[in-house]
Image (cartoon, rainbow, N blue to C red):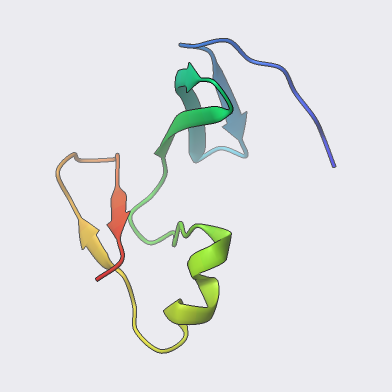
Length: 71
C-alpha cells in the first residue's frame, strides 16, 4: 500500500484518467473529490455489498466529476 500525505487543495493522479483532490480536512474526516471517466465505477467500500443488489444512481452534475448517490 502506498501511503501519501497531502494538504487541502493538493492532488493525486492515478493512472492517466483518475485525479483525486483533497477538498477539506475536519478533525478525523477527509473530504475528497474524484475526477474519473464516466464508465469507471467509484463506490465507497462499505456500500459494495449493497451495490451487488442495486446499483447506485449517478449524478452527472459535471462533465468529468461524478458523485454516486446510494438510493
